[in-house]
Image 1 (cartoon, rainbow over the protein chains, first blue to last red):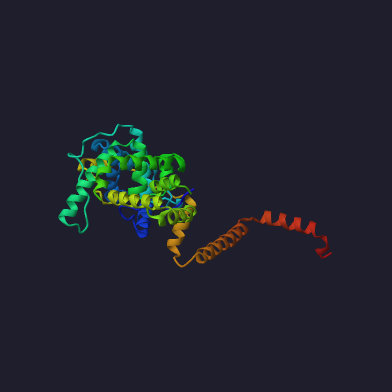
Image 2 (cartoon, chains in turn green, brown):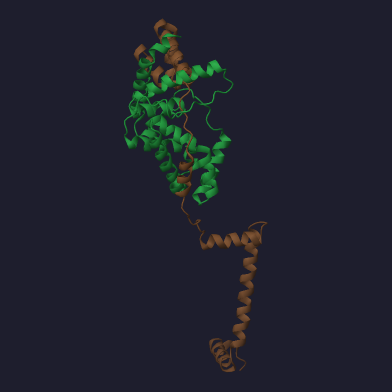
Length: 200
Length: 148
C-alpha cells in the first residue's frame, strides 16, 4: 500500500556502498568465513543489543536476543540474498525484533538509571546534550510503557527508518495493522509526553 | 480527506508531507489549504516529531562476555566444496587464464590425438589371421572389385 519511508530517520542509514560491503561479508559468511563473521559482529552487535534493549528494556534479555540473532546470521547466511530487497541491517532488525517479541516479557519500568548509556551528540553544547539526555529519559520511560508490538512498530518505522511494508513484514502483520499500531503508539506517547510538549 | 484521516496519517507518516505516499499527499495539501485546524494539527505533529528526534535513546554497549559467546557458538563449518565439473573448470581456468576458447581447443586437440593414437594402436594389435579374415569378408562383400 505505502512504499515510502514512514517517518524521518533519527540517524542516516548505511550508505549504499556499506550495504554492498555487508552483502559481500554475508556471502563470505555463507562459505564459513570466520573473519567475515567477526567483522559483521563488530559492526552490528551494538546495534542489535540496543535494538533488543529498546524493545525488552532488560539488558540480560537483550544480550541473549543479540546472541541468538548472530547465531542465526551464522547458520542462515546462505539463505540471505543481497538482491532480495532487504539490506543486512533490515534483515537483522527483523530477526532481533521477532526474537524480542517472542520472549514476551513485560517491559520493566524505572530501569533508566542502571543500564542505558546516552548516544553521542555530534557537536552538541553541554546544555543541548543535557537537554537531549533529559528528553531521552522521558521518551524512553514513555516507550517502556507501550505494549511490545507498538513499541517495536514505532522503533522500526520512526527510529530505524524502515518502510511500513518492511516493518509489517518484520512483525508478520498487515500494513493496515502496522499503521494501527503506529497510530496507537504515537497517541500514547503524545499523551505521556504532553507536559514536555506544553513547554514548546 | 477529512480531518480524522489526516490526523491518523500524521501519526503514521509524520508531519513532513514530502515523506507521505503520493496518493495521500495531494488530498492532504487541499485539506491544509482549506482548514486552519488541519494546519494546527500538522504544527503540533511537527513539534512532537522534533521532540522524539531530539531524544537521546539508550544505547547499549555489548559486554565482552557476549562477544566471546557469539564467537564461541561459531563452530567450525566445512567450506562448501564445488562439484567435480566446477573443479575441472577451475583447474582449466588456472591453466588457461586467457579465455575459454583455449581450453576448448586444447580439449579438442587432445581428443583427436587420443582417437588417432588409439586407432594406430588397435591396427597394430591385429594378428595375421585376423587380417586375412577381414580381407575375405571385404572381398565377399565387394565381388565387383575382384580381379577374375
